[in-house]
Length: 154
Image (cartoon, rainbow, N blue to C red; front, side):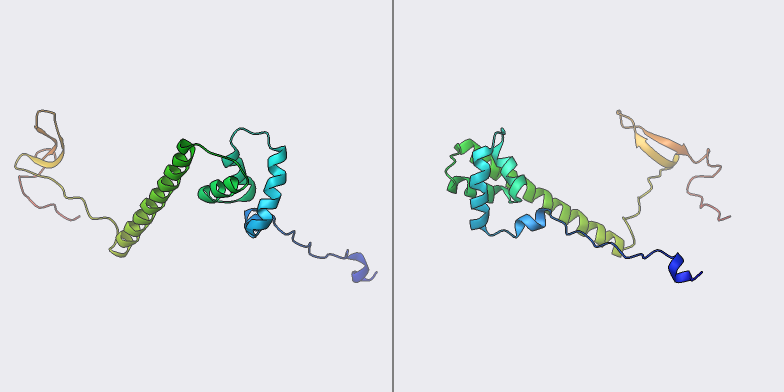
């Protein structure tokens, strides 16, 4: 028997094109507005702003503007709520950027700054303080050392 006849003809499968938010984003505003008119005629949900945003992959302010162009009216409270949400999201993004920047700086410097160990004449390591201000922790005696005696490497 011929080995070519025994092997089935195997071809790689074609990849399907993904139709997600990126495909919707590429729609020009005029086309999106035409589709939105048809969508609004059959819309029966409760939150038109949120549903429009998800359906047409637009940001909050663009959604508000386009729905107003289509003839919907919103209260000042709804508009202010959307603006607050945009600002809150912007603040979150800024906080993330600052946190990432701080992490990168710590990584460059060799990690976070080492913790300063608190000691005194009675305690080798002060773990904390009581509500009255008295220190507590590991004493020099518990460590088997005299006060301020260096640790032996070994």
